[in-house]
Length: 311
Image (cartoon, rainbow, N blue to C red; front, top):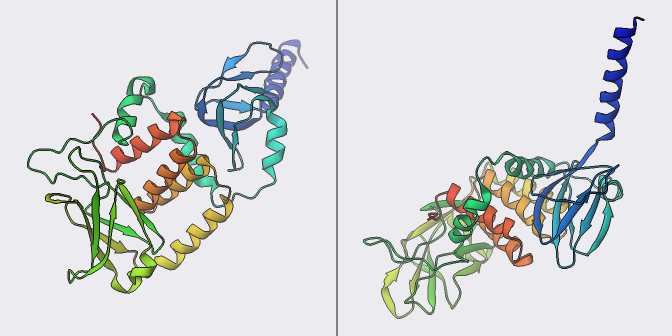
């Protein structure tokens, strides 16, 4: 073999070996506080940014009170909340054996969405958090219904409990939520000081009714109300397969973590079950209220589906 070709062959071999050694294990989906990564052969501690790839021989340093949400290449998620140093290879071995056949597609989708964002997230972070209603109270648009509900005019759902949510208005201290059938006969009513209620549709004979109307009114002021919206039962031909897919997803993502809720939200959104997606975003934020990445993702979901307007 001629020296020139031998050199090329050796270079290609080295590049191949390095590529193999740099075996991607995780992608970073969310981060809070002080999290660092140290690459092999280096002592430099670099910040762990959302979207970053972590490799087998990397080490992660999680500071006190910090949080790191990771997606493994197998489709499983893992959260690091205890301060300390973690070996990526060891973390990978702990989750690699777990089955994630169904949920992997949605974990990959969430990771891909994060990695592909070309906008300045630092610049737009407040805008997306504002959409969730966690930063500011809603101001009604002149001529529109004073109470804005976070749902399309018509939305499909299964018979699982659904979250009905609306934006707060300054003059209201409590609300009355009412559901009726298409004959305008009341089937459910509840008063709440919150801006959401959880309704068990199984108890309202939803599979038989197929359609239910709901609206929210400020208590003591009938003029401060939302428009009436329709809950529609999923097409009967699609319902069995969709219910099975929901069961499979929940089985694989059985651990009650914020990351799993985000992945479930992605699944529900793709299947047009926007109220279920919304509920899972809310659950993720409740589990990890200080992780702004989840609030940003929720704000993007609301804006993407025209459920709220970013300012």
